[in-house]
Image (cartoon, rainbow, N blue to C red; front, side, top):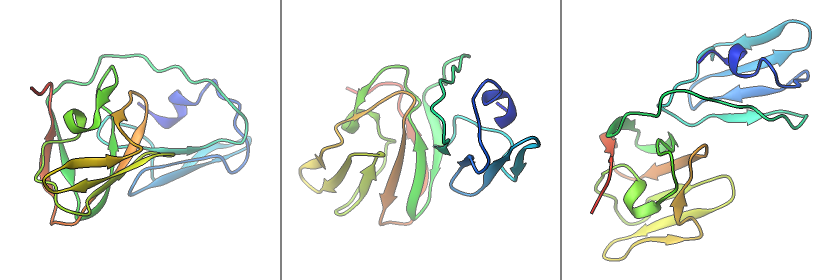
Length: 149
């Protein structure tokens, strides 16, 4: 979806912006958005800063699962591809997590402990939210599962 279409009904102000892990766009009053980020996808999380509270409605076809994503060594910005909340252990991409790998939302976090699993205040992945995942290994291609168990 194009950034301009998503925010067409929002009350935007000078300096409001949208960031991905690699790019951004900023709103200029009377002119619109300018920057390298023009299209939003379901492949990553986005950070949005708006000065005026706005309700944005997004509709469309649910994300197809399983969903393949690329994990970077270090931090990767991940979306939540699920249409309902799912436990952290069941919802994170399939990967060989190791000691001191971290995942965080805007307010909560969890750390991975070998032999135990994820521990912290982040216990679920929620639709519409984004997450930052830090892996200490080299990263690689991984998959959000359609279901586990």
